Length: 459
Image 1 (cartoon, rainbow, N blue to C red):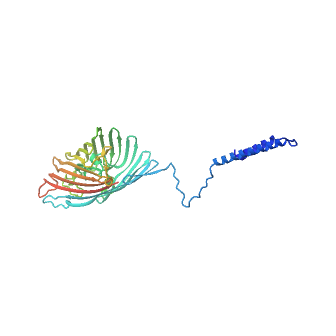
Image 2: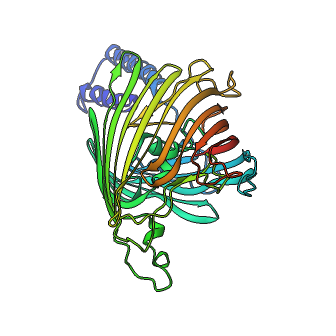
Image 3: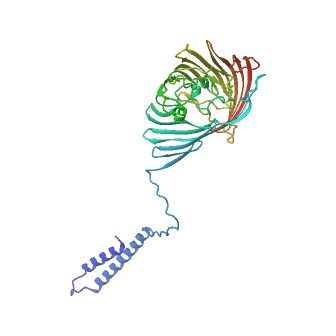
């Protein structure tokens, strides 16, 4: 209640207390009443001044500056951007990230005396140019789409839709059928420029199919697959076209990866059965380049064989402890020939690697090796990660009357990762052939030196 209201009420009370009209009062009483009224007015004025000091001053709001109205941001649809080699966008449980890869190679393969093959010598190439994207649609649904320019052609590589629920992962599309630790590890995460010789010799590749994984204490992977996408196209069946290619395979892999103190261990087995169902139309050859992809020459390889079924089996073992890692694998393949004895071939490799830079170690997740993230990147107080790797690689393509030859390879690599997603890979190797498919001066036992360098950017 304001002081003026109180003042009015007090005066009314005083007026009411005065004698009724016509009733006389003495001069002394009138003087006393006037003095009391004056005192009450002075008290009320003092009270009103004190209340006025306590009331806040009126706020004057300046008119808004001219310009566009600010965007309305609601808590329902925030968008975050995270840098992972390229921007990754996230909003309402959905995400998208552009992916790409550039690999440029320089390679040198020495020529054995008497061999003038133009596929040997020095060559350069873009090993891979890849572009695509990956993301999630919410509710456990994800996707990945990648195209690659390689060997003067455009191929579809990892292209699939996924559904994840708890420890289970369902994948449908073009993917790798769980064939080997070295094959499944990304080419920008590998320890050398190229994978083990048997992975190419046995025609490991992505194929169209459906797979299911259980990622628990034991990793269980399995699926059913058709052929690779290029073989399923109509123009792969010749001028008449058609859909005769109904090849299929059943593939599975089992991995146990316990921790033992500071060491990460890896043990695995895989089994595969592939029914080709195109006997006589597309003969199969098992062969391999002299390590580097810059050469199209195959110094080791079988003749063309009519094969209607392949069965293969692989074993894997690896360990990571601090800057050290070691890995070994072996794979056996049996090719069933309907009108001839079955043929069996095998390959294996053993490898050890060490990081020279402090704090760096090889990463591992979900049954494969991952990308190296330098502990001290270039420009941030360090030089990046420097790793050396040594590998012995063996391939045997001899069985009975089939003489494809054997290859022993001693390989070394120095990998420099100055910053995340960027690597320089330098390789050297000596390859020894016994019973090579290509003769040099009539000799099939000889050796070649190889040297390679790769610049690679992956995001």
